[in-house]
Amino acid sequence: MIDSTTQIRVARPSRDLAAAERFYVAGLGLDVLWRTTERVSGEHDLLMLGPAGGAWHFELTHDPERPLEPTPTVDDCFVVYLGAPVDQALVDRLVAAGGTRVPAHNPYWDQHGVTVADPDGYRLVLCARRWGG
Image (tube, rainbow, N blue to C red; front, side):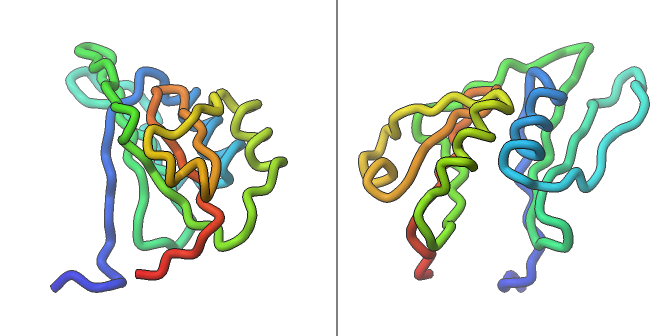
C-alpha cells in the first residue's frame, strides 16, 4: 500500500556527480545519504541526496564507461514548497554552487517562486506557496 510514509527514490543521470553534489548540498542544503566510494568496472557511480530521515531521495548516477547525457526539458521540475517568500540568500547560494537562474516554462512558477537550473539542466523550483494536497 502506498501512503505518506512510502519511501520514494527519483533516479536520473548526471554528467558530473561532484557538480550535482555542490548544487544540492552546498546550495539547497540536502544531505549526502550514500555514495559509491570506489570505481568498480561495469557499475555506475552513485550519489544519493535528500533530507536526513526523509521518505524520499535523489539517486544521481554516472556510468563512466557508457555515460548518458542528461536530457531534461524545460518542464522537468523538482518543486520545493517553502511556504514562505523565497530567500534571496538561498538563490544566491544555488547560483554560487553551480546553478543558473532561469525563467520558468510555466508562468505559474515565476508568479509564485524562483526557478534555478542545476548543473545538468534540470530545474529546481523554489515555490513560496504551501502544498495544499
